[in-house]
Length: 327
Image (cartoon, rainbow, N blue to C red; front, top):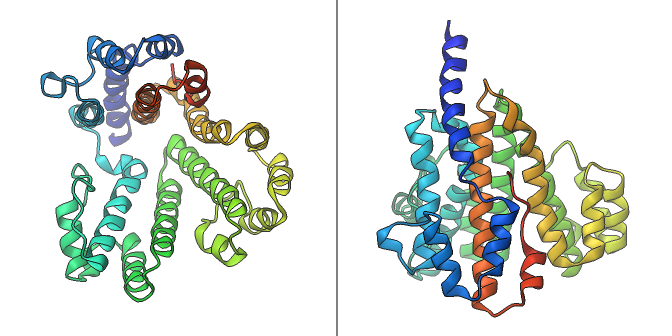
């Protein structure tokens, strides 16, 4: 029966993932990386841990890109339908849309701005937008693509263009979460959208945005009420904190009170905390998706540390920005 075949397949996949999890950086590995004398020593440390390949030696950006590719090579080896990873690839596809719209409307050629390892690679995306053949896009992108294109063309307002596309990305992630029968994808989508909405509220409060702007930018979800959140943002940072106290994101309120970087860090940690219990769901896709998210989190953390070293930040202020690890 199909269901059994499915859980057999996951049993194999999860066994492979268990073996790979051993290679994930623990908090103490991250601590060792922070303790490296300088940027060069950090790169050397990462290379010794098997990061990058012979091509990327000494080049941080190439190394991190290579690590990102390795994640998807693992997934392909497990023969799991990429549809399951839609929620994780949407941000990249919508990034490509944003870049293509800006390129088409401003005529500026920008190098290296596209992701190629996704369902709609940059080359295809820029052609679709240039030719205004929005019907070639998946249904969840068509309307936003057209609206963003028209609005950028007529108003030249890059921020509005970003807002339209970012909102469509959140809606798409949320819908994919709803459609999925995997608890981890539902939880991930819920947390991702809620955290994004909270970030929008915080940014809008700082830049004195209107309630119309916030409502346009925020995506509906179950765990926060966007109307109340937007109204709170109009009332000031304390009002946002008061609203959050009554939600599942009360810790976010504490982080907000602490510092902007503590809040940024909480946003990412919240997602990692959401997926951590999935580690133990042996017969489901949970551990596989959790591994992909954990690796992306790890790469992001390494990027934060490298940029701190490059800018000669003291270890303590790098530590303050570092994300929670999955293992």
